[in-house]
Image 1: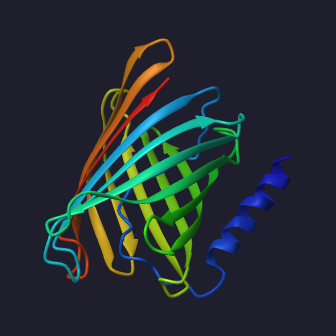
Image 2: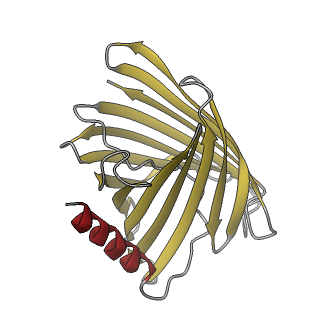
Length: 238
């Protein structure tokens, strides 16, 4: 079983790196962990604001509202409603997304834990589709946890040139307590090289209910990157 899982991981890595890949600039988002919690449901809200966008003079705000649940011991799924707002445009629903996470290995089975992410997104008013496949990895070093997300996205439709893009997100956090985990995140894409501090934690509400939260301030490392990105995530699990 372990040999089969190892071959599957190597195959996924090969698929992620095969072909001509051009990275997208919009890469700052949630860092996914490669785990599924059985018999769990969740409601998630993400908010992100960026200023000094490449080619833009206004501030951009993105919002995502999702409902998710575990489907099996190794699979979970979520459905997203995506909204956008800027200084020049009022809030509007921009698109919809379906997401699935596949936990490839048991936690602690190998030196690192592995998972796969699959996303299908559709623009609401334009004929633009996106399908993403991501490789997720996490490894513990004492009280430190490091997580990596490598995602390849294919875009197609009548209102966009078909293209393949890739993004990379890295996170290192210190497990000070379940309520507070300080960390740092790095993001890379064609128009983004960004780094900044984050705080994560969770509050237990009794039974299986808990509230997870994340807040981060990510700063661009070059002239192409957004100058500053603030991201917030809250997740109610039950």
